[in-house]
Each structure stands twice: as C-alpha cells, then as structure tokens.
Amino acid sequence: MANTPQSKKRARQNESRLAVNKARRSRIRTHLRKVEEALASGDKDAAQAALRAAQPELMRGVTKGVFHKNTASRKISRLAARVKALG
Image (cartoon, rainbow, N blue to C red; front, side, top):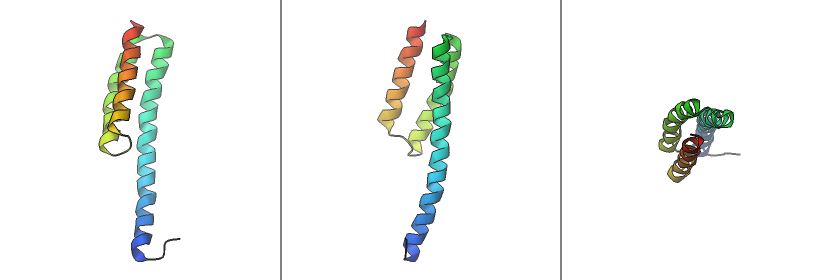
C-alpha cells in the first residue's frame, strides 16, 4: 500500500489513467470489430467505411499512449489489405 503522500497521489493518478485508457482501448476495439464484421459479411463498401472510421481512432490511441505506433500501423495495414482483397 502507498505510504507517502507522493505515492498516494501516484496511485490515484494510476487509477484514473487506467479508466481512461480502458475506455479508449474499448472504443478502438469496437471500431476494429466493425471492420471485421463488414469483412466477414463480404460487403466491401461497408468494410471501407468502417476502416476509414477505424484508422483515426487507432492513430489517436497512438498519440494518447494506448498503443505503440508500429502496432497501430500493422493493424491498419493488415485490415487495408484484407479490404482491398475483398473486391
């Protein structure tokens, strides 16, 4: 358990950051799931629209420190390739 005032404050900050990051991660995963569902249904237009919505969300996660830049780039690249192959 935190004893010093500084460690108590850090514990409080960690809890709030956890909640914010969890919400961001959930939002990003929702967008990715929508792309996956559009791919599974075979609807290229819906998949492209979902991918266009997911890309800025992923990159926003990078700037907020939720994901590493290469991780987001890899996910976008792989999804884009699958959407392109759908045609």
